[in-house]
Length: 170
Image (tube, rainbow, N blue to C red; front, top):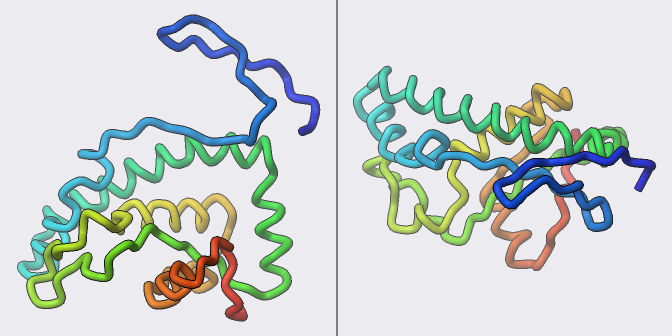
C-alpha cells in the first residue's frame, strides 16, 4: 500500500492505531430496523394498497442505508482507488453486476407481493437499492449500466463465479 498516515481510533477498549498491514475494509454499524427490516411488508402495502406512507418509509430506509454505506465506502475508495478500477473496466464494455446474496428464489410472493418463504435467506432489496444508488451517485455509474438480474446472479452463483463483472456490453 501507499504511504499511509497513522490514524488513531478511540474504541471502548482504548486508543489504538489502525492496522494497515491487511486487506483494506470499510465498516459501518447500522440499525437493521432503520435500514431494511420490515421492508417486504411495506412494499406489499405500497403495491397492494398504493399506501404512500409505506413508500415514504421504504425511501427513508434506503436513505438511511445509503448514508451509512457512504461512511464505509468513501474512505475505502479513498484508500484503494477502486473507482478507478471500475472506470477502467467500464471502458472495456461490461456492465457492473450486483450479486446480492440470493440463496432462495422465493423472496417476494408473486400473488400477495409480501415476503415469501425464502425472504430471510436473501439480501434485502432495500439494501441493494441503496448500494446501487451509491455507485450511481458517487461513481457516476448510470442505472442502465448496472444489472442485478436474479437469473444471471443465480447462474453465476451456481457456476461458482465470484467476479463482479458480467459480459454484457454497455
